[in-house]
Amino acid sequence: MTDTTTDAPTGAASRTAAGHGPAASHPAPDVPPSAVRRRRSRARAGTVIRHVLLVLFGLIMLYPLLWMLVSSFKPSALIFREPGLIPSDIDLSNYTEGWNALLHPFSHYLVNSAVVVLGSVLGNLVACSLAAYAFARLEFRGRKVWFAIMLMTIMLPIHVVIVPQYILFSSLSWINTFLPLIVPKILATDAFFIFLMVQFFRGIPRELDEAARLDGCGHGRIYARIMMPLALPALATTAIFTFIWTWNDFFSQLIFLTKPDMYTVPVALRTFVDSTGQSSWGAMFAMSIVSLVPVFLVFLFGQKYLVKGIATTGIK
Image 1 (cartoon, rainbow, N blue to C red):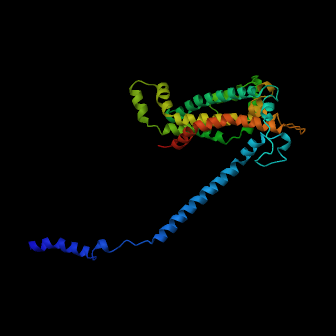
Image 2: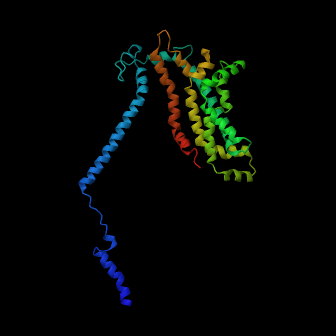
Image 3: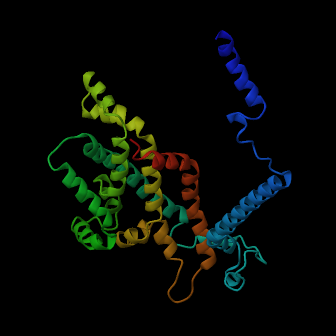
């Protein structure tokens, strides 16, 4: 009986080695080298086609910007006569003429836009973060209702509220000042950024708040010392979007700023176009390229925070 028990594994092993066991029931198929090469070539061809399509799509999207950049170096008479991207004549005078073509040097309008943008960014960072902390962490009556009303304001176009705002600011003698463009930001009127920060704050564990309360912290210290350092990606996203949207805003600045001394960059660029047909296209394109430089730099240095802030928003 001992011999039978000892020989059983040996017999099973011998059957497996002879090709009769379960390990040898499904032999690995032999793939010819030619089939492997064909698969690799098809995969490589698919990758090349995808990259070519992406490059072509990118060139189509960038063509207007490239055309404006090339046109800024062309003489005004050749801008629409030679619409190609390779200029036959290069003229750098568009930048010098455009810089001094208006009532003030173009740097004056850059400073005006910088003041409006800086006030808007600071206002949104402080006001929207405070409102978001209240919606995310405080318990008060009607919180869900007020939060829903706040979200509904995102759907309101600016054309609906611009007339009541103009009447209000005119009665306050704020027309032709930067106050109508900055004060609403301090009052947390951008619901999109409030919603963005609320989603980020909800992803921060409440155990951190409870630990801070045990150490004697109130809501002010919790907001300043816990929430704000952890919400850096969301704050960076808010700052970048506020900068880009405010810098490129034309409609609101055209309505509230009517004196040439108060013009910002978008409104100043509009003055290069004359309704009588005597438009300085070359100078306008040159100053348009200059106005794009701050936006490009902000996006270049802040894109990692922008992507991180959007990717981490709403993660529980």
